[in-house]
Length: 396
Image (cartoon, rainbow, N blue to C red; front, side, top):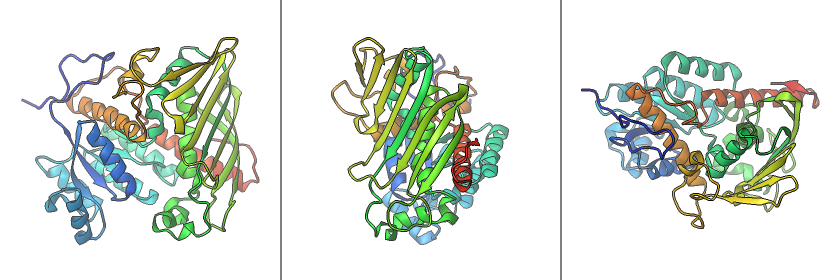
């Protein structure tokens, strides 16, 4: 009898269920973000890391694999070898996380999709629209699960904000403002750091640096919470610090479905700002404001009424869709690791459902998928076209 991962009777309104076993996760790319994501995946108690392609050098991959407590025969020097070997392994990985530099995403993701292995890929999905759309088609044709690492949409109060908007809590949306301010690129010599060089190399990072890295987080978050796709923008790229081959700052005017106007700003040269992601959505009856550096609280205003501060936790106005993504009681902080863990929790549910042949309710899982990843690539492309045309409005 085939192994079943999910319970027979799923309660789509309650907490996410326990699986019959931990899912096996592979890692492609051994950089800093892979450690963050693996930590988050383990936190869910639904994943164990069992294989990896952590370097293109076989000896180095085995050495890094030992640091991850991986057996030598499950450490690979290429993602192609890993995809083929794990697909044939009796206890092969159920899914893989791809945390390489941008230019590797397409080939790696395609290899695992074709091997029948589900994928969670870091953003931006690819450096080119055609490749992003190729992954959309491959996902549709294979039936695999494909998640994208827009973890900012996985904070519990962000899910609560999305629900408030969907239920008409702020009325008809009339403007959307989002910004992502960081300061780590302020020093003039920062471009010499190994983990920075590839982010400023167009052959690896693609045609943008700041826009593709943090600007896509801002764009996705605004559309995720508002429920409105971004349709048009005008962008100006800037190098505000030491000379660089790609931008470190971007200013945009934006337009969403129904002609809703907005702004989007992102920079890595804002001293005093580290995780400065801020979202503000205003409507005909009220507004919402959220700040990553105060991520447990959501400001909710109904015009003419006292402001409300909604805090992460159980009860007190938190809906079940947000509540099932909380782990600790009110007053005991959760943060970015937990947001990543929420992404990996929903990914686990989707992988288990696919393997069990279970159709889940449409509103049960709202993690960012390959379609949202492709939207991010279209956003980057439109930003580049607008900047190259001296800030003209362009359609996405």
